[in-house]
Structure formats: C-alpha cells, structure tokens
Image (tube, rainbow, N blue to C red; front, side, top):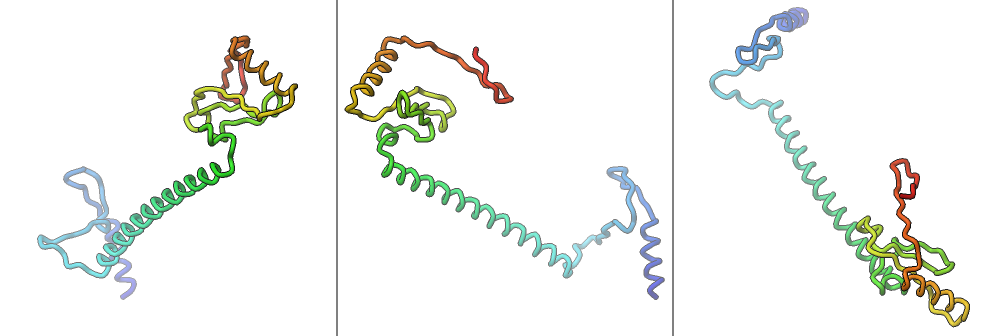
Length: 169
C-alpha cells in the first residue's frame, strides 16, 4: 500500500503540461485543481489565514513600537535640552548649540561655529571668552575685537576631500 501511494506521487511529478496563457511548463503535481464551485476550506486554509492575520498584527505592533520609540527619543531630547539649559550659562542664553563649540582656552575660551551640527551649514562664527578683571586678558580680548572690527584678517577657504584630507582653495 505504501509503495503504491509513493509510486502514485512519483508518477504525478513526471507528468508535465504547458500553460495555455503563459506557455510555461509545469508539473501536474504542482497544479491546484479547482471545481467550478469554491472548494470547502480545510484546516490548512485556516492555518494559512491565521498565519497571515498574525503577520499583519505583528506588523502593526512593530509600527506602534517604532512610533513609541520615536516619541520617547523626542521626549528624551526635549528633556536633555531642558537639563542643558539649567546647567549651561554660556551657550543656551545666547541661543548657541554647545555641540557647535570648540574649546580652545587661548586666546579665547570657545570658538562657536553656529549652525554646524544642526544644519551642517555655518551661519556665523562666534568667539566667546569669560569676563575678566585681568588687564592682560582684557587687552587680548580688545585686540581680537579690534582685528575683527577692522577686518584685519585673512579669509582662508578650505575644502575637505572625500578621503578626509583638507585642501586650501
């Protein structure tokens, strides 16, 4: 009996046909034969339907999870900005992004490339230094201000290559 069933399926794999629409070859064993009336659903159809439903529900859950993650990230960013405002007496009151600042300490404390991180285009460059009572430090600050005001500086245009090297234009 077992060998008869196996022989039956083996013979089905060896019978071929040609699709009248596409002209492609097919095996008889790969065909799905239907009657004119819709076939009655069986347990495999139910399993396939349940599996498709579970996949759809899983996709919706993943979409909701991603939406919740994005909301949590935005809330975290907002809370971080608030925390930085409380502890940052230098950049936040001047509406500067601390990520745009570079610490140099001499001749000034910070150089800020305003807009560098957020927009990737620099709006302006700010030189920030602490208030001082030292006459030497104050003289240095005044000299820097005078140079900038009079325009006694050179413009240097630099270009960054794809390999990361810097070239003067």
